[in-house]
Length: 362
Ligand SMILES: Nc1nc2c(ncn2[C@@H]2O[C@H](COP(=O)(O)OP(=O)(O)O)[C@@H](O)[C@H]2O)c(=O)[nH]1
Ligand SMILES: [Mg+2]
Image 1 (cartoon, rainbow, N blue to C red):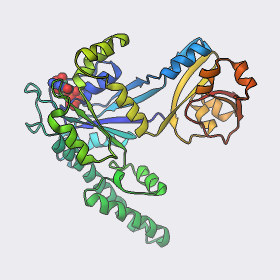
Image 2 (cartoon, protein in one colour):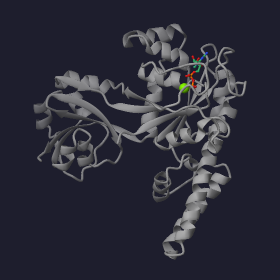
Image 3 (cartoon, rainbow, N blue to C red):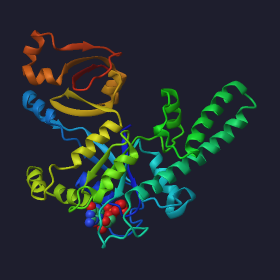
Image 4 (cartoon, rainbow, N blue to C red):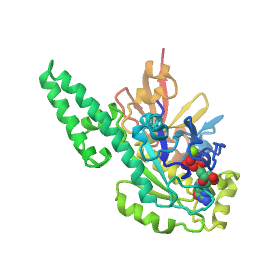
């Protein structure tokens, strides 16, 4: 049940280049709309300085970073929700991801075609957002029809459901993405269950050109329009892809040579982790140290299940240290003396930075 981020946007804005940069793989990046037909998944290792330090202290035989998944979804055009440009298929791919990375083009480059023949990040953003809203409107209308039929048999429950559907439908009808509504946890879960699109948390990547890091004013306009809830990251995607080709130790120096203050991709990954509400925890088993990402609030047995399903089924208890304690005291015996190794049972909720050893039997 790995959670995934979907890279969305119009054709030719730099989505595949971004995935390519993120995975250092060579996803096809070509100058033709619709060149990405099938979805393309990249597994990205999380850079985590604490993991390296933990590894230096614990000296395991193997150290494995946590990963996060990005899916490159083919470009959407106006009319996608009506099936334009294979739109229905691509919208279907968006249903399957848990959060959205919306790439908009801010770079000017006469060699790269824009489907509408102009560079206007706000207009691009609106076109794609509108297609998501229209798709949600269609879904909600279908759900409403079904619930209305059910209302004949079970009037009371159906009435509650109907009200819910109508609240969401009204918002979407007024052009308001569901992620902006102040919904309760139950409503939110319900909207996710129906796999609505505009409920998914979103970040925006302003793909800026090398010579205009402010995207010709586009970055500021995006921030102003989207408000504080939607993070906007200005990333020079093409350059980041070139930087990503270099060995890790040379990247920062090269970025600085190009006048960038930092390499941008880790910010995309970190923001993705936040959008998905994931925390990092560590496990030690058989001389293997691993970092994992799990949703905040995950109970110990399910967290253990990430390592192996047997560990969830046969979960007995877990020994837990915090990463900061391990890095400070640097030995098991010291931690033991100080009472910093806890024993936790099935009801324990795993916390950010926990270092865990699972006891289980099957
Ligand atoms: N100048 C410039 N070109 C870019 C940038 N990002 C992508 N491109 C080019 O734009 C074209 C389309 O990029 P691609 O990643 O395939 O777009 P996608 O359709 O959104 O997946 C390719 O020729 C890329 O090399 C950028 O930041 N600057
Ligand atoms: Mg592409």
